[in-house]
Length: 445
Image: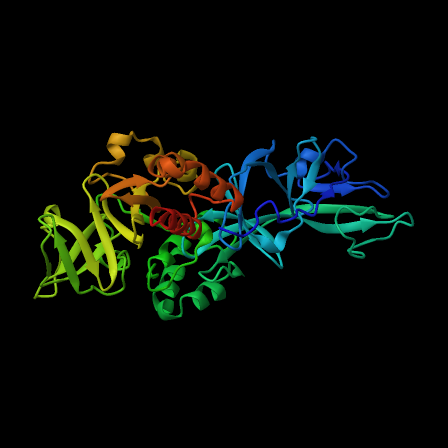
């Protein structure tokens, strides 16, 4: 991608101050004394989301992600994302308008320009997130006055004591990346076509909108109504997950219909392994969950495409899939002497912390062998992955630096120079297209 990465200037401000813990009723009460900078007392670490700064990455609104990892931590008091620079100073990232999300360890923080950061609990097309905030409880001036008092910017020294309380709030992030307070009205508004089902669920389960467990279950329930492709999902970090119920080989029919590459089955033209080609007599679609092609027969039943082993290329209404003997169907993004393709498919989630956070303790504790069985006695979580490949002389190579420099061995220096100058990310769709086009220009000479 040609957007300047390190050319985006971080406007940095040195954090200040610290505050004193009040032990009267709860450790959630914090007092910042008058004339005291919040960075000056030893309680500073208590205002951070994590005990220690952790490696993390930044994703920008234009879609690219810096390869460089920062030492990051979320400052709950200042509601800023802080990092440690090479000199060891703690600074705040100030170019918030360009940030879409920040990943710290296995935690994702979604950024909304007007209101700040939200920590994501469930990464689904409609996501669930929360905020842990310091809310001003009261002030106390030298004359003994108490009350909500004036609003003073966080980090600025005041002439009076300020006492805060830590509170949790829950939010939905919809498919347009709009943040909504988690309420009954909000969830019904996001799913207008399914109000009857959702109202029934709310009544049956007596959902408490201040309960993390209740909201997680409600969010999972509501996401089943989303067609992940027809809706052109823009879920947080573009991550889409499917929960496979215990005892099931496949998701329900209703969910499965949304897990195809195209909303409708397409006319298919097939190039066979013997290099002959023909139109297939049944419409076809790529199944993202199974990674296979499915067809619709004369009766309208959805079946597996049985002649997959004879197939080399499938053209579905102008979208071309190349079948690699080891990797399966790869969707062609660019054709040329050097092609670019992507494999979209669901894989079992293996991140144990993520699974435990989402209540899937059985999957987190089970062995890989148990999790990969066709049927398991517990729910399992799958996640949609995009893996890119270069296609050269009908062979697929995973899109990484070693592959491209091997394939472009005779022009290695030119390719390296291009990648460095344009800050090419080999995990970014647009960057890979630009790199592939550049290489094809060289190969065509």
